Amino acid sequence: MNKWHLASSLIFMSYFIATRFMTGLIAEFFVLLAILFFLPTALHFFKKEGKKHKEERLIGFLMKAFPLASLCATAAFIYHSAWFASGWILYTILLALFGFSRLLKRGIFPLHELMIDGAWMYLALGGLWFWLYTADIQVMTFSPIIVLLTVIHFHYSAFFIPLFYGFLGRQQAKETALYKAAGWVILLSPVMIAVGISFSRLFDTFSVILYVVALYIYGILCMKTRFRSTLAKGLVVFSSLVLMGTIVLSLLYSAGMLMRVTYISIDQMIWFHGSINAFFVILPGLIGWLIEGPKDQLKQKNFPISKVHGRFQMISFQEESVHNPEKLGLVDSLDELNGTTFSADRVSPVIRRFYEDPMAFTLKAAVSFHWWIRPFVFLLQPLFKQIGQLFLGLSRHPYEMKGRLIRFQHPKEERKSVRAWIRHNVKGKQVFFALYALHHDAATGYMNIALPLPYSQLTAILRPFNEKEDFILKSTCPKGSTGDEGLYLHTPFITMQLPMEESFHMKPETDQSLTAVHQMKLFGIPFLTIHYQIDSESHHVSQ
Image 1 (spheres, rainbow, N blue to C red):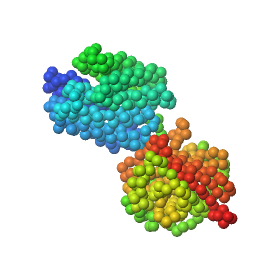
Image 2: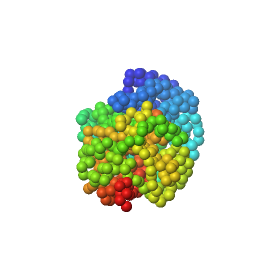
Image 3: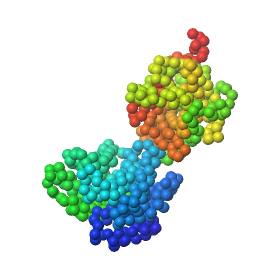
Image 4: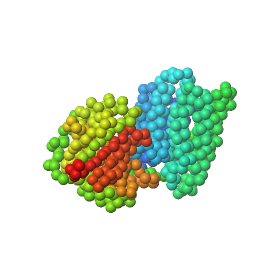
């Protein structure tokens, strides 16, 4: 938290206390405490992290806009104004966008970084409930105090607990099954509890019990995890132990609601539970984690990516960007892909010949879109046909894919030695257009394949593997890998990793033919499988 944020927050809180503290609700004070002091402190941590990763544009704007946003939040409580609250909800949407942009760039794994992303995204719900409270909008049968408690929920436990748990994951050598199980409960609990409060007291109690178990696991893991700073560990463990005690109050309140017995009143929850959580859970936990400064252990991927995008018509730059046909391979030599997981010397000679001179082979493809994706593909067929991309058809019958492989240059193509492989179906219709290149890191070479799409492009970074004489390319990382492999969508605004997987498995049949299986998955569920029969031209002549 920088000095300008601290100064503005002190001024705003002083004015709130002077004008509203004696007549307003104590719950409003706890909300402002989180908004004015705790949240900007967390934001400052990610500002420093963003500088290291050169991702400071959005976080920099959020830091500069904070005094204005916090003024809106303070004024919204003082004047009970939905207009001022609109400023805060807009700011929380930007905070959620920050978390979402982190998620898009990296993907949903690892879980500990997803916890941090989710924490920032939950703040938008806090902003929404904040606005509903100040606008006096009736939400179902909830009283204003319940709406205000929901505001507290999303500015405290729904934000800081996933954030702290994500920091804990950064401290650990690997994510254990216990860590993952508790993490998913903590991440989903704000929604589960909200659903339970709204629709089912039994489900609410069940959700709170799961949440209590997960928080106890958090406390135990905090005690077992190594920290660089003894002071930091002491503060974090103290925070988690207090949390393990106060969460029991939430369980008693939820159980009382279920059995229609008052074990603890709402006023007691606000004063006792609220003050202890603010000053003895969030404050020491936040200070402890800031002292420890858990670092993002993920490798920042910085591989070359094509910036060539398509349009909503047949890709027009093909003709003006290609050179005269010549004998070309997808790579000059398969040896260029050698690395820790792959040796070209082990690959069958016929597979090597195909990769180094694919135009000397004929391809027959049997395309199979899986049942659940076929309706979407059917609806998109006219678009695929119009742009000449991914127009693979819905028939499962094998057909010959003709094509040409050419060198490719374009003002927005920054990769080197790029080859364009344009494929057509038996009717001469263009079905596929991909830009092939490769790049290396310290461990291996990668196939770097770009598919231009309307105002964007899909990039597949595929890592090579051996299996006997077979050749395998996969977008998934081996366990423990920090490589570049993955599927990425590049737009003019952001490059995001997709929850998709792609693999090619090539097997030799004879010294003149081979087969290949191309599979794609979404969230681990297969949606496309293509079986290729690949024969050399000399194989056809001999027949």
